[in-house]
Length: 304
Image 1 (cartoon, rainbow, N blue to C red):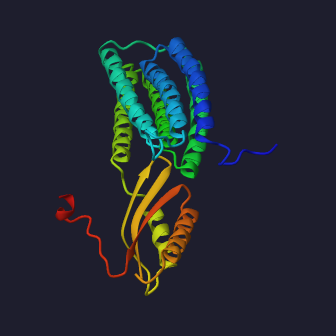
Image 2 (cartoon, rainbow, N blue to C red; image 1 turned 30 degrees about the vertical axis):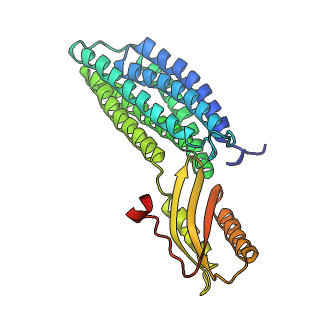
Image 3 (tube, helix red, strand yellow; image 1 turned 90 degrees about the vertical axis):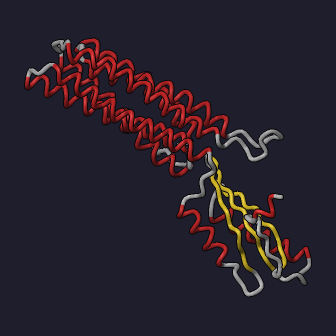
């Protein structure tokens, strides 16, 4: 049997798988809560509903991000993925607050747990599914440069840690007989979820504000340009940004004024092709200037 490659595990396919896994874990975790009456497992089940909503929204945004550029969106729809990350952060925070509210009541009115063994078995099984899917998502997110996939993977990892904390709490309740520990663990889990939700919203906001490309990508750009450096050719005003899976770089390329337009354009084409080969998904915009001309687009006078 041939194993799937990272390139075949596209964001769309993995997010579809995330929807299916979320439905399965909802059944497992809701069943675990129902038979044990544990508020910790209730918190775990509530987060699975968030997983489902996040996966559906993420799948929608990734599908939109794949649309080709059009007249209204000449640079494409790649930033749609950042909305997915921000939306998921909001849902995680809402789930965490709901968990804290439910657990707060149980601290002052603790209830005995029922059929702990079966409840723990269902919780561990669902965590195994989430952990495996998160591992695949992280690997594919790096390969496809998908923030929506990374956001869903981070959320699933948070869910795994949530389940682990709940299992530890239930075992502690069983061993000590301290029923209030169940609610305390649920609150601790909720605080961890709050942190993860805030982190996702921050990542989303930074993406919408046109962050520069990653340091390793910028290094690849500079290494590629160094291959074309010559006493007659130089590059300056290099600026970059990223938008979802796409990367953009703008720069000036200076060359002798005596060169013909055809020769200058041929060199520029060679540079653009080399950059796009070095950085998949990169779009390069190069402005040609004579060697003795400087452009100061950051000067206040240029804004007049």
